[in-house]
Length: 357
Figure 1 (cartoon, one colour):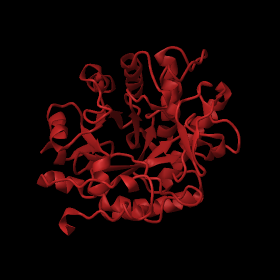
Figure 2: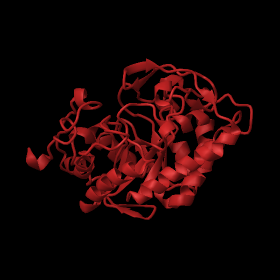
Figure 3: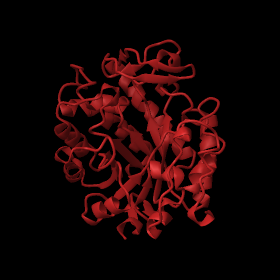
Figure 4: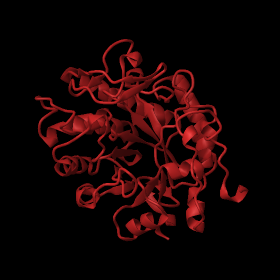
């Protein structure tokens, strides 16, 4: 079974090709601290070939959702150290996802100031604040002189992740957040060296990659994209050209490219629009495929050489021992929708392993 075969990712030996995808669970406490039960939550899922954590803000200004964790204070580093120790004690491997939401924020998170973005274009949608959902507001366009400091924030967060014991980091370049906003021409209307052509639009994300890789080493860095994501007013006039340019630019700079291109569910990509194969050829490194896969479709993609690893999101919520269940061909439990983004321990660490049912 290809899913259960080992794979060498950078300097890590993965025992299988099953990746736990990053998933916001909205359970952080205090000043962006992982929940006290986060160590248990991730350790329960340590049989994954690789765990990628929920997105974690690189700075105070990177926030855009209530109850999400950060990686920019000493207390946050200490709490994350508990998580990595628990995962490593059970033989697991874990990357931290680095996150800046850009325009998908609100003045409530910015001490009354406007969020920042590549261009001053307001996105449709809500920010999830302490006072509840509030409409997104127009962001402030970042100046060219601000970009080096912003890249340095990513590098500082990556350094904190290494100090917390993570095996590596993933840059969140998907889902309409800051790096994705720079890449796509629907959200980037700049006329300077960071806007216009695909090569210009990917310039800042690649500068961030360079800054982070200088801290961690390229073998400990991944990059996530979602070429067809359309929430938060995201769009691009030519995703094929844009993301091929990005994939080519990432070649040799990161350990893997994590591509979200759903094959099932309401967001499934039209087969005629799929570009994973093209991106795989341009990148020529390890590829993680993500989006609606089950055991059979994942196995088929791996067998055909379409990807090296498969990321599973929601199935890992209710099936902490997902690799064992896929190996056994066992039925998968369904997560409780009411506790995916709310609550404390219930719906978080109380899903049983197959052996305990």
